[in-house]
Length: 326
Image 1: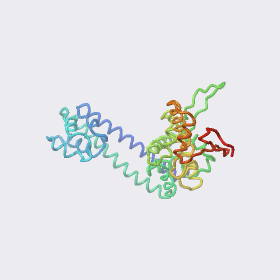
Image 2: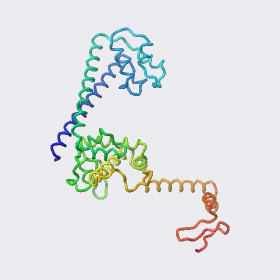
Image 3: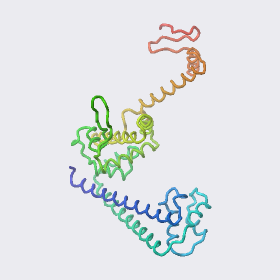
Image 4: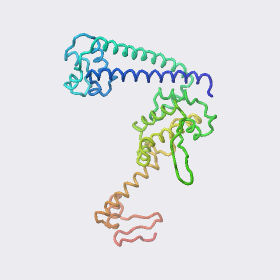
């Protein structure tokens, strides 16, 4: 059980999460009510919660007559959708008084939740004043924003001595694979049901990490997804992230894995990937009719080296087609 400060922060972050979920639900209900009346804003706007869609919804609910020019004034210049499609999506059935009032009630509830979330953000920021160093460490990891860092600290705490090692943290967060095996037959590898609040934050951060500019987790995800699938692979990335967090908090060091080079590409994965490319290229050349002698000659030409040596130092003579003892 963490100290009182962490428990208070945990209550605030969980309340914020509930409010965000309610706001998302109400917004989906609002869009669904408009879709029933043939206002298909989600067909032309990639983000129906954006500024352009917000202004158009207010225009529709105003109850005053409007023209096509009024609709186009609400659309941002960065919107890529054709203006004809936008106008066609904004001309639905006329809303009656009851429908309009219902939509206004939903919209007022969304605005009220937004204000409450802003108040909670201020309280959470005040509660995290003593944990700025830990938030800074977390934000050095790809995919972790300031909001995610606050949630992780609220659920995980900052003291890692109670866990002992990283694998226990992963089990506590519900990210450890199951071990249901009997008579040599594997029945299940599903993760546990723990970490009801921490696990979604780490999964969300893992998706952001594999899409970030830093290629470290993206390289691991690409290799794992070929064998496990994307859903299992993203859980594996989340497990790697929480183990990294355990070591970062224990040593108070920024995120920098040991198995990466200067460009943050995992060495083992990069070597495996390039080896597969080389083997595929050699097999393709053999299928095209080239002999091993011709393939080695091509490689030597690319290296600007007339001779190639093996691991023992023996040089390969391209003229006689054999290795000469060093």
